[in-house]
Image (cartoon, rainbow, N blue to C red; front, side, top):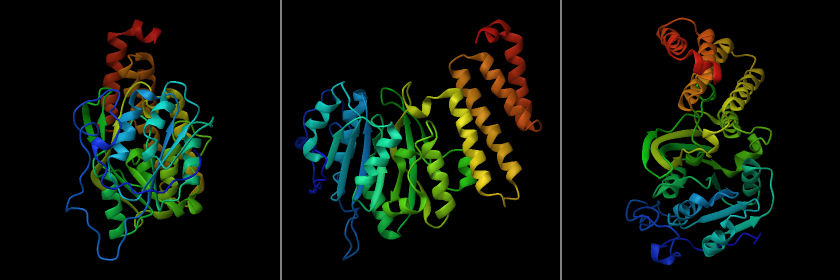
Length: 346
């Protein structure tokens, strides 16, 4: 089904959708979103078309929840595109089950998640673009809120907050919307991909997400957007738009040490593009310090104590003074004193 189908999506109820394979109570299983009186446009305005692309490849475990969280938005001008890479785990059957609410889907080999999103956006006809992985969901009313923000004041990019949930969908924490300011993305957190939306025509100015990056294409994409449009047209709101599932196979939670070197390359590329920055050295130092600290925490989570020690020391050498440095050295000493044999084996 390669063509884009156009049809009305508003007013969809839970009873309109197929009975799910595995159901729980609440959103998006037994509840649909009702815009009520809250979401009304000024006279003469129309709801902008929003194109959502979901890349898929043998990730059926949470796929139905993702599909329902998009469809049950009940957004009246939705274009939902599925880019499957040739799944053999039942995903195709699931897509066909929800086909009446999908504008377009294909199942052909691709070059990975980023390639699938780029190709989906290339065929999209919406004024606003977003993408949602098969293990994440939109929160109720997200597309309506994005559209209202757009009609109030057009944006080039908009980022909301993200709820973090575990493998069972249980709430872990909430991350507020992150800025598109390039230096903030380099030295800290990036706008969450499932909570980010883009005006379609900015791709002509910033380009697609890069296929040569495995773990950081969304971070690097956000940096390019920030360089071009922050602060006036690349905006952030605090309210959460999505729920990101943190589990062993989520790409953000994967990559480990390979992701570190790739992220450092993104930092260096940005600095090379902006040689006029007076504080380039400080930006690089702080970026690497935080990259190493973040990786040390990941190594601790998997009990790789030797690697944790290595990354903590790398972080220390970037910023060897201050309270943070003292804490790093204290943890390093603790590792050396308490677990020397385990460090040698990790």
